[in-house]
Image (cartoon, rainbow, N blue to C red):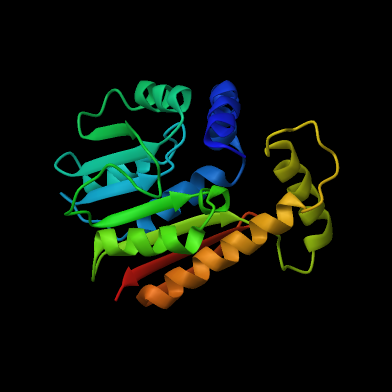
Length: 221
């Protein structure tokens, strides 16, 4: 999938994705938990890679307070416009257009959050390395991603998960893939979370939403 195709796809469905991101049962508490896992203090600076329509940004702003800085990075114009609309009341929340693998941000970043992003990247391990380097030793990186569940009740949950992945992978008209998108997504997520564990001195691993969502937070060594 080219960047242009992805931007067109996610741009077209920006408002629907925003509704899903904010209203899906179990997801708002997950977003609050992911923000808390960044271990932010008042006045800190946090960057969200692939912020989408901005569903996480208010939770991050709660953590850093009015004197901190929240930056959301995404590459899709219509998605960012939605994020700007929904965070307009905050003067310390900024959304910028850019690539999560080479974000247009400088130094002095205390934490990086990336939710439901690494599965879209060509080289997720390299992106995680870059984010770890950005925050430096003592900073925090938090990943939250959806992958197949390992729970005892996994088969029906995973069937629904596969359907969602197929429907949200451009083009949505395909019913059969040579390389199943949900399996490809699993591999990318496993790789990204494993790399974060390798780079971290302290690690927290959690599962949410019937075991489908994996959250890993790390304090970088």
